[in-house]
Length: 170
Image 1: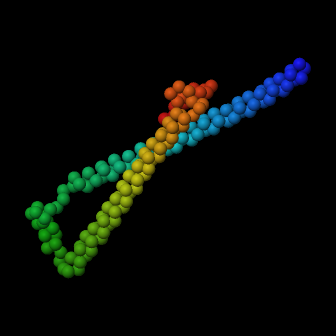
Image 2 (image 1 turned 90 degrees about the vertical axis):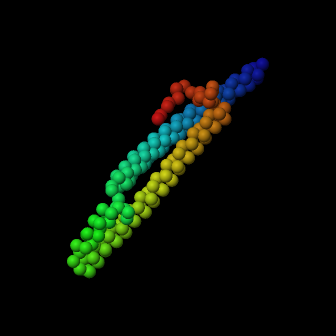
Image 3 (image 1 turned 120 degrees about the horizontal axis):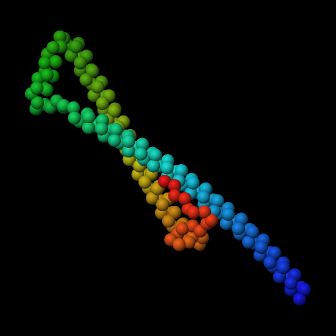
């Protein structure tokens, strides 16, 4: 009987040690989960900030485009605009002035073409960045939902069982 008692005591001691180790593992897992939640929240905030800044840039560019488009555009079928251009050309005294005026117009045309290409590239990059941000966010949300559904440590409706209430960082 004494042997059985000492065997039970040894088994109880071993089980207590296992409990301590499991509690340590659980605490480490909870700490890791909290750390990952914080990292996710930080990255989500960065994505929201980037998206907000990109949206502001889009609004600014849209406003600039509307301003440019609202300016009166000379049309070939507009006799007033054509007449003004003809009058300006006729006021030029010689061939050198005409060449100078033509070069100014060509330089302006080239500058505008470069600006247009730059804006198009910027727009494409913004669209790509926003699409990537949205895709990343959806992937993370999907993984988070899958993790909560599959986790044996999850409780009702995928809520984590812990001593602390779950935090909601926006």
